[in-house]
Length: 546
Ligand code: CAO
Image (cartoon, rainbow, N blue to C red; front, top):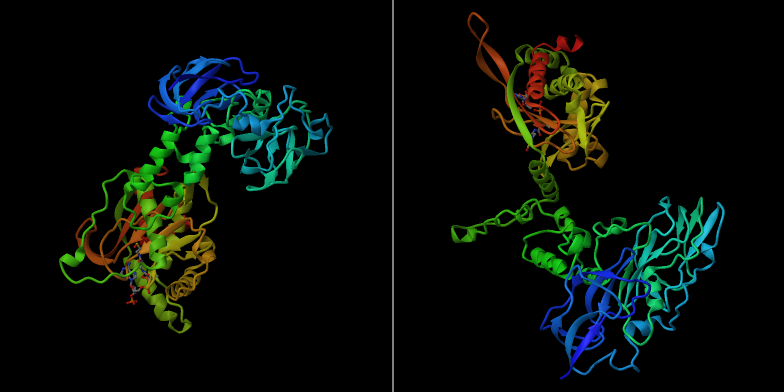
């Protein structure tokens, strides 16, 4: 069988373009029209197809080489399905883009010079591609659109191309959606604003195709990377940097391309990268963001690069019973896991002397016996925390990127143990409420929580949370911060302890406090001060007035 040279076909106006991707290797069986290499100019990237079918015997180009029309790409031992060798046969893409015109691509009326006001943007001349599907939309109403900015990607069975805007302005209305089929002249969008005409605005891919004579295979898929200047190393308009065929490949596999790390030249995502990503997901070595978001509370840690979770056949050791976890446990589990992993949390333990406060609480409850409202220790803790949060406002903040959001409201969440799992109702504006009102609201909210009747509004907006195990027992624990809050107070059971008063040990009722805080926001010294201040207030509430 004959050795055939496969050359770079007419690639339009492009003089010398760099080889940025090799899509085949020696020994590969290539089909006619199969993409061999990707080349890239400062305007577009395009894949160069094989003009013949056969076995690759020699690669004549390497990454970084500059090629132009006529450069030999590789040597193929032809199997007879030659395309270029048979002048009569019209290459697929050239056929798709025929009739071929060497003239500059015409642009529909929309791109004529215009003043301010609504401007229609139409699909420009895209060769003779018919009914091409809209596969990506890059803009949304309200976006400021620059001239030549890509609006959508369309794809035929041979090529994908980005359609640039023929005008500048603010996008008022998009007239297409994903999946729509479009043709030359179809209305794409309506812009409003300052308009500069774009007499030659056309998809680069179309321009390349249009310039290709029918005698040789034209570049297959070209992703137009419209001016202004494209940085090949970065994605265009936030899109992953990948050739059309790789995008198509990823789409067919359902691979989120934006999550794939590109190992090709200048960070370009190659087919190998997509394959490696798919294998890693299948093997459980990584997760897509969508999977991570849906991760069950007992995720196996693979996403963190940890060794797999132990798989034990418990039934081997004795009788077992398997029960599906409840919905609330699953949801709170996933949240707790994220918060435990993501937050560099530290816990400070301290004790507050609540001897007098507890005596006051008990006597108040006796006096108020008939009112039906029981004053709880937790209500005092909420008020004391509000005072400490006001004194140390970073504890009432949230991280937002590199900024801290300080909240000038004090909504306090409290953990409630329910038959369905942990819930955190919120006392809103605790700073404006008295102990009686807080106690009453807490009672109502805790009941609603136990009955599964809390509304989402009653569980959101907290700026700080208290988790009290005081009625149950224990000494100290390390509560997990309820993101995006930055601290949480854990409270355990108060006990009488001997405390040195300077002269002697006296029995005092001591309340164990465990304050967990986000070390990105709060320093250890601030946490110690917060706890100390809290202890002072609980020891003598009159300090709030100071
Ligand atoms: N020390 C000693 N006793 C305490 C106490 C403390 N810190 N806090 C409350 N108590 C006692 C009260 O005096 C009361 O006793 P009596 O019945 O003898 O009067 C009893 O415990 C119940 O207290 P309470 O009615 O004031 O209720 P509470 O405020 O302690 O709890 C609520 C309300 C909703 C927080 C609680 O029902 C609950 O669900 N706690 C568990 C929270 C939780 O699960 N946290 C862990 C989250 S991390 O997984």
